[in-house]
Amino acid sequence: MPLSTTPIASADDVELAFYDALARADLDAMMALWADDEEIFCVHPGAPRLHGHAAIRESYRMIFERGPVLIRPRQLHVAKNMTCAVHSLVEEVKTPNDPDWQEAHILATNVYLKTPQGWRIVSHHASIAAGRPPETAAPQGVLH
Image (tube, rainbow, N blue to C red; front, top):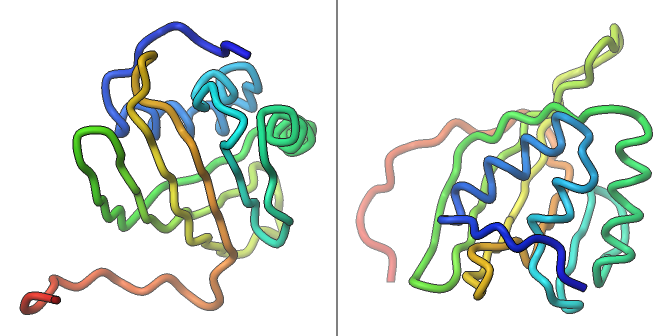
């Protein structure tokens, strides 16, 4: 099922568009970012793994029924090559107009693949993290 023919130049551009679609509760924009492959998968915090466009689309439809999801990505770590990029980050979640909102953060891994249509999402995995997010420190030494 072709979703979008507009090439996306980089994994970073897809990620910006992903969080923008969440902030606007734009289901069509969200789904246009996913690879045209039924092997895509998504894990929302505390939820089962979803496979394929239909299941992922339905999950975002249900999320967007409650309105926009405001997330500030932080502490991005990237591993990439010419055709694949893996982004590990902390998502700070804000709920608009919720007086009972408490600080929440989610650990997320977004995987992007360079396709003939440009960069696309192939996996989004998010898990609620306990406590406050750790502050990033400069890496020391070389890991083998």
